Length: 300
Image (spheres, helix red, strand yellow):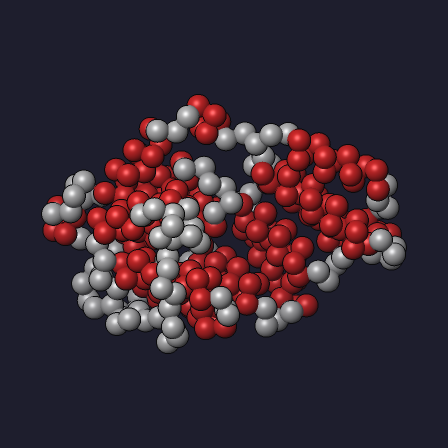
């Protein structure tokens, strides 16, 4: 893929000639939202998983936090806490989930997997400082972790520490063995360069996926229009088996919103972030990223 030229990825002239007006992704998001059933709008998961996880933990009689790591069943107790934390996350109780993850960490204090889970939960709860502290603790255990470095780069991105974000996201994009996950790091790496003032951002030189999110990579390079992204989002799931339609839409809304912000249009960016959040796909990384960006914009 070629590096971006001086032209912006989106401009008013191009938007004016795209089907659906200047913001076709927003039009699609409104259409999707209007078709949701009352149950989908409520978004409340069943309580069975939560009650089952609570019951399993109660039956196990976990020890106090200061003793858990020294017990033979420490890893078992930690996994039971993780199950409960994930059930709380499914119900969007991120504060409650973080409290439970903290118990799991007490049982297995060097588990980078559980530390990463806790960091993401704190991030989703918009405790960015707390998430950053947990990530640094995990990186002290495994300083070469791609996942942890990427999360640290995301936190730098949200906090607008562009030089740090560029360095960490480049490492993640170059080192991640899975090409689809690597390409998601490439997207943020590109945008961090744009926000840092780099005139001609570039991707890490490696083979990109032939599946989604290749269209988003092309969009950032001004090789795809927003209307073409709408077409890609609407493709049947057999075309993009790795990501469902609404998840593709959430991701597209977030990255197009970030592109608008990089071009100096934060008000338009906020509309895209809000549309991504309104899809209520809390398991999508971009949902949490969009929320973090909205919180920043509301303070300006």
